[in-house]
Image (cartoon, helix red, strand yellow):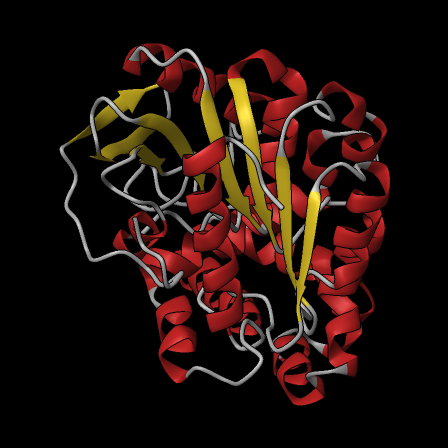
Amino acid sequence: MNDNNTLYPPIEPNRSGMLAVDDLHTLYWEECGNPNGQPVLYLHGGPGAGSSPLQRRFFDPAHYRIVLFDQRGAGKSTPLGEYRQNTTQLLIEDIEKLRVMLGIEQWLIFGGSWGSTLALAYGEAHPERCLGFVLRGIFLCTKAEVEWFVNGMKFFYPEIHAAFANAIPEAERGDLLQAYVSRLFCDDPAVYTEAARNWSRYEGSCLFLKPQPEAIASFESDAVSLGIGRLEAHYMRNGAFMEDDALIRNIAAIRHLPAVIVQGRYDVICPPVSAYRLHQAWPEAAFHVIGDAGHSSMEPGITAALVRALNQFAAGQAFD
């Protein structure tokens, strides 16, 4: 086991494949680590960001049976950026199909940002399938959080928000979300590709406490930006297909399970108030605010806290 709470060395999947979940969507999935180990499911952010090889490295491969997959419309799943037949309820069904296919009874659920949203939604729907939760950069997809993402981040990143807004004609800037929706979901590839790149660049530029040019560049790539731009706008305009604040109201379904919440103090994308609200509703969960970190799981303090939590769970099925 890794005692210094740094990422584990790079690993390759033991097996991977494509799982058709309906007549439109086919999901990429992979398994790494110990085939007979404790199952853990990694839920990526966005929605639409997809998984990456780096995310395998949070987990001790000698202990964990590590499952990653790309959600509908994301990463290697097809079709990329597809928002039709794409709801939180369908993603929850997909997770269950994957679990059954892999022959897993219960698993630890790991999710950051949108992944924390989906982790909570899945857990509240299927608490009997969950061993516990590792949650980072909490996003509950409330109206207030969506409004903050679209308009509030300008108070910390005015020049980045200005570039995001200025890509839209002045007459439409009163409702930036709708303005982007109309472009992201049009039929002209030139229009929706540019809109997706502008949306994704906006988010990527605000991920870290200290700017990371390589992160911004990766968010601007077509493979990433189309999934992020389209699916984030799709889920935000639909309130993640849940009643507002449903995840907090339904928390009793999972309060008996071990959990840890890791939050960057200077997370501008998902401000700490959401993590605080979740902890107030779930006081049994361990709660760690990282004082020198923004949003990304690759912030050093956040990475260390996540690896430490996973090592703790491996050792004793609990968090502190």
